[in-house]
Image 1 (tube, rainbow, N blue to C red):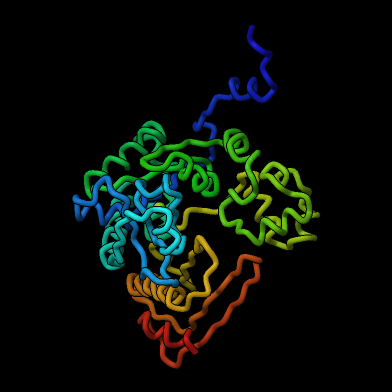
Image 2 (image 1 turned 135 degrees about the vertical axis):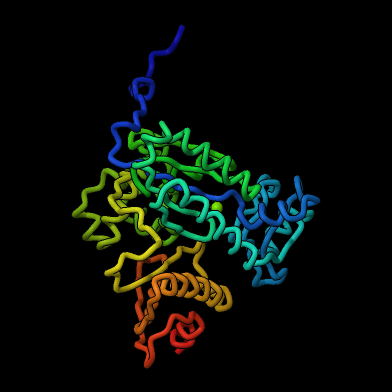
Length: 343
Ligand SMILES: [Mg+2]
């Protein structure tokens, strides 16, 4: 005899996902093990082997990317190289070429912009796409997602995972659910069902220290957070509390920001979130140089020069520090930005 269905099961079975009722259709395209996959593509002898891109093999080295063959051993990006090698001694370590990855990234973004002008590159191997306007032409989100996957595969010989939803937060959370080569469509019902029972640390941008803060006020799961009164969160955590509440509920009105400039744009910025906190000066300098380079490219594209350079740093405990410096002569040279920031 069948046991009676729980309320939860019944709701799940009744639920029917209908993207046609969505205000927007947003994709988050995330390349699978990007650096490692590029190395394997360029050197087919590596195929099927545990490959780690990162280094150096000393106490400072970290894993930047690792092929899926290393995952069963518990190797993850951001992990110290030494620890990764203890877990997976056969791993092949490659120091990698940021220049090559940058080239593939540019190709990727270029390819994505053929499907919609609304492309926001979010990191070297991720982008948000607003494809609301492409639905008439392509029929359905899953059809368009398949086309994008095929085209990436044909042009770059790489795979990606795509998350599809009504907004950026839910699309971003969706893309990691079915890696590699995945396609996941979530509406807010499925989002709550999938992530609600999980610990708050599953949410995008919620680090270890934030988790401690939430636990202190009795919040363990995403559902706990989603049900907390905004007043309490503001009182305990300030503005970040509200942001976290929106994350837990999958609410996000932010737009997909096109990279090409609006004519009246007065400031240009790029930011990134590291998978882990870092005090490694060389790593931070590389990250800053890469962000400076991206800002500089956009400046040059719009034939602009910048006079004031600022840098914003946010720690895991939500503390934000900003510093700016006005240059004597406006420039679009990323090396000069770095020089100013170093002071
Ligand atoms: Mg990726």
